[in-house]
Amino acid sequence: MKFLLKVLGCLLIIFFALKFVIHLLDKGHIETYNSGNFNIVENYTAKDNNYKFNIKNDKFKLSFDVTYDYNKGSNIITKIHHKKINNYECILPIFKGNKILTDIMCKQNNTVYYGNNIDNEISDFIKEMEKYGYQLSNFKDKAKKTKLSVNTAVYKNNILENHYLALENYKGLVLYNTKEMAVPLFENDIYTKPISTFTDKYYIVADYNNEYSFKIFKVVNIINGNEKEIRSYDEISFDSYIMGIINNEIYLFDKDAKVQYKINIEKETVTKMEDIKYYDGKWHIMSLKDALNEKKFDNNKATVNNYEKAVKIGKYYYLYEKTGDNYNVYKAYNKQNNQRTFLFKTSDINSIIYLENYIYFKNGNTFYYWSNNGVKKVLENSELEFNNDLSLGVFIN
Image (cartoon, rainbow, N blue to C red; front, top):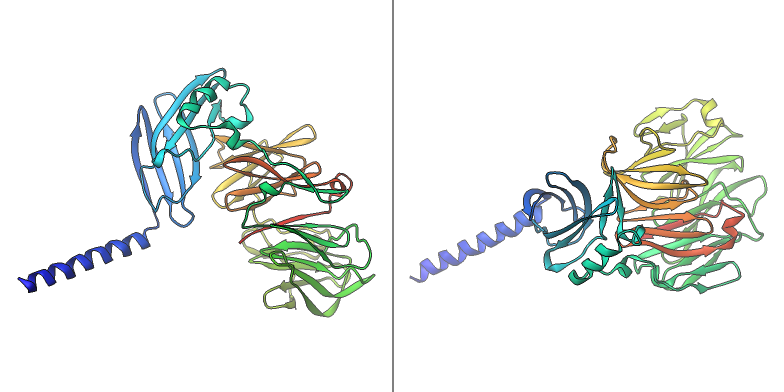
């Protein structure tokens, strides 16, 4: 009897160990189930805890995704509230644990709008959803502005704990997280710094204390403000430009010397390239003419008709539609663009940072971020009205 109990105990241990290993190795799942009259296809990716949903009934379909740790659980939508109101058809999904993980989503033709963007037009549905725990205020920006200087203000409650922000100024850099930290790098005001960029947790800039050429790149860790220098064996002309960044290695072209360099911040090396190379998803040899005309790497370019610009970041397409002096920014799941989701407006499509589930962007003299919880302000700087060369960097730790 004791022997049988020991065998049973060992089998149970092996069973639970195997179950644990299978859970650990699980990379995701695709499940199909129903909620009311909606059919739901749930596509889960364990790597980033991302759930993509395709939901439909006889006359309506909509795709969306959320990121949440349900311990790799499936069938996480428990109910879908649905209503046609004005020119929209709206849903609010309820998730396991009676959670609301996304704003109300309303479809008009092939465009999806979040409730916080059209709240005046769907006020009746918003009021109806309040009895299920929905609060419009959770998706609106409520943070108060804190003035830091004549030029700068910060929205402290919107700066997330593990998000580290760095904004260029004329003397160097200012870091923002739990507190503000100035990092002076130059003796005099430098109004434009074309040889500068952010990559990963670093800011790198040419030594603009020199006049015509330089040998030193200044590097700042934007988490803690620590500085270091990377030295080139060659003098590099200020008539140079950054071509692009691949795997956190920075490619720079010196137009005077007609030489391409690769800078590795971690190894603290500056390597002269034998050929001029270009990257657009794969490497090519680049012509000297293109390099002298300041052609930059095009890592994420996508071709989608009828848009000012389109890029592919991870599994999403981001589409930029010009409207007057601004741009509407949409997210789509495929190039066919059979459903696009409106995210935000921006005045500058060249100052957008894509990070995990957040998108940082500039509109006028203010930097914001977009997430599933809506659009939130983080920084204002009046100098941005006059100088578009002041860049923002963000690192999520």
